[in-house]
Length: 66
Image (cartoon, rainbow, N blue to C red; front, side, top):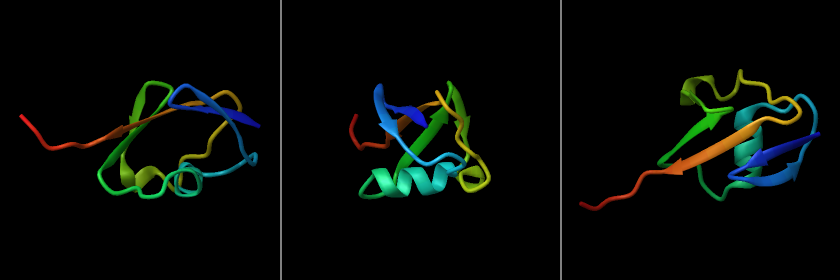
């Protein structure tokens, strides 16, 4: 199945959880927030959130600065 990660199409396994997907795609999940189809998914819900064909995942990284 194909999902979008920060506007890039990625082919992945059907039935994969959001947690499994981001762990496979990103070097680290520290300091990030995720949204699926414009809805924020809390970290405690990543494992129970199952991705569907065409889902759009947005990764936002926390940064320091002012």
